[in-house]
Length: 210
Image 1 (spheres, rainbow, N blue to C red):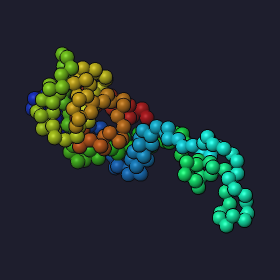
Image 2: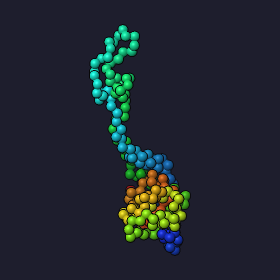
Image 3: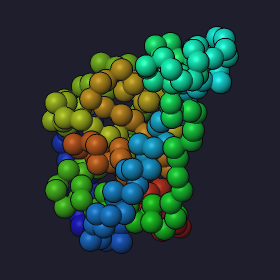
Image 4: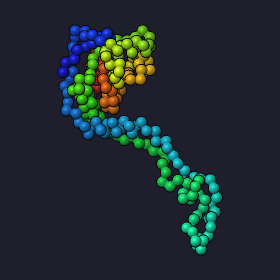
């Protein structure tokens, strides 16, 4: 698949680049994508939720009333989960929600996500550029020139460009990320995927090595 390379004015540079069919032209594997997105969400969970059981509640351990002959249900101490202020029964405790996936499966999920974007025509290639200083307005102008200002955008660079990252950080609809950090969720979550010219080779090297 060949795509034109655009400049920051949104115009064609007269050059084009060939996207690897092994990465941008595979048959999407829906189950691999599902597992990768599920893992992403699981890894975002802090798992710090906690509740107190009856052994952790402060209070007397004295039996409230005799076992039989009261006409009501038997009861132990005031920390009984059935009573207001008592301990919680089977409540949540801190835990780790993350789980592992095979490297090849995660690589297949990324290729599937990238191929889906390519098939939809939602990938754009922009020649490498940077700013002299972080400037949100300049980054917003680039998005307007590319006619993607109203879309959720994932902008991928070959390496970390701090100036470019800071310029796009306050744009709610955009996310700037270097090639080594792309994941299935962010690719699918974006309406448009904008790749810098040099990031193509970086992505090829990373996914072919996995």
